[in-house]
Amino acid sequence: MGQYRHGDPLSRPENVRSKQTTKVMKKSSYEIFKKAVPLFLIILAAIGVFLGGSAAFFYFSGHNEFIAGLEAGESRIVEREATAIRHEFDNVIDDIRFLAGLNELRLFLDTGDPHLLKGVQNEFMHMANLKQKYDQIRCLDETGMEVVRINNLDGRAVAVPEDRLQNKGRRYYFISAIDLDEGHIYMSPMDLNVEHDIIETPLKPVIRFALPLFDSVGHKKGIVMINYNASGMLDRIATSGENSLGDVALLNHHGYWLLGPEKDREWGFMYPGLGQETFSRDFPKEWKRLRESSMSQFTSKNGLYTAAVINPITEDRISRYSIAPGHISAEVEPSLFFWVLVSHVPGKIIKADTRKLIFEILAGSSALLIFMLGGGAHLAVAITRRREYQAQLVEWALYDTLTGLANRKLFFDRLCAGMSMAKRHKRRLALLYIDLDGFKAVNDTYGHEAGDALLVQVGKRLTGMVRQSDTVARLGGDEFAVILAEIEHTGAASGVGRKIVGELSRPFKLERATVTIGASIGVAVYPDHATSEDALVQGADEAMYVSKEKGKNRCTSADQVKS
Image 1: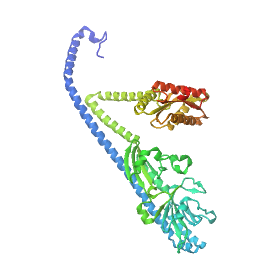
Image 2: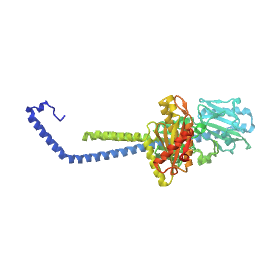
Image 3: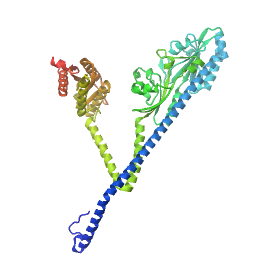
Image 4: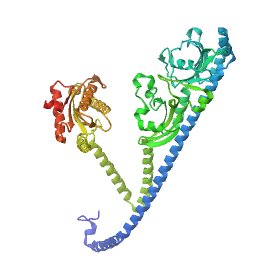
């Protein structure tokens, strides 16, 4: 806009004086601006220091305040629920001791008169109606046969008829409880109620408390047992988690979820298919720290953890009640019989607050900067966007967009780095070249979407079979590669290759069909088969083609190619 076009009014003769005046004014303003630049830079530096210092102060004070508030809030939730659980156990123990001392029950134990069971039944029903948290109250004879059983049906105590009473002599809790001495109390781990050898549905978590019964001359006559319905306790814990920014969970001493953020992973020890679904497997480092003290709080790369170890069989309870721990498949030592109540605030939530805080600080600073310097805020935004874009470009450049695995460039970078480390530490490194057998048929038959879904599943299976220190890459199409960063001997690499062949031969369930493919794999080991990057890749590639020629769906080592 500062240039004039032919025909503009200012270009006519009568406007020459005006043009000269304007030119002089512009020149004067320009000279003033040049002279003011050093001072402007000093002011700019002072503003930068002021804004930077202010932003840092508000960030650290705001972040520390958030973390302190978060830690205090999660601690209150965990401590409150842990205390409530401990008090609950004391109440149950008091109740079962009260039932064992009932006059009607003592008289029945001495006489064996079945007519007295009606009075015992009435007392049990009164207790069940009074304490809705008890799912069952039972008296069993020395063989495990129920003689009195009260069930809680939708909040109403109901006595089970005699012809529907069951024998529980083979159940682990009866076997443990009947062996106790007089006055000792049995307490089982928390598990799911089982009726007629089938897990009851809807699921009913229970803890069984039992006390052996003796007649007046000291003969053992059976046990009295309370099935404590832990659903209410778990619901209360879950409700308390609504006040938490994260997930509140209850774990048993093996790290299984009794209550967790994912319902389908709870009670893994009760279902054969979920035997490995444990917190201790997913978060081994955190699990070790959670068990170190009765109350702990720490931050790891996965977020903030606040936990309380709840040990029902404390020394205090043992001395007061002579509690004997139960077992599931083997006797549990009192020191190992515990639960962990844990609140987990994922790192993404903490990062989200950090981002929010940073955004608020930047917004305030930008407003002040705009007020003082005008367009500085636009420059900051442009730089930030450029950095984010550059970071995205780096990600696109290094990872396969379909599977999320390392792409060809990152693969060769890691192979080069891995071989350098192997050479420095005198270790072996293995390269597995993998080409899928039958992939084209799936792609042609069911379409590219099915082929893409298959490649994603292949990537997940490969990733699940190697260590975190290893690298799984997609080199393009249906070609994959695996770098085993450290192996004992060449046979170990071939063993991994054979396992991969077996794993990829299992059916893949796609949206439109279940398909079966195979894999031809070539293995080359540094330094046994090659000492350079190119030679190692060539050796693995040639071995892979030998697998193809020998009938596919097999693993071939580079030394087999030479032979």
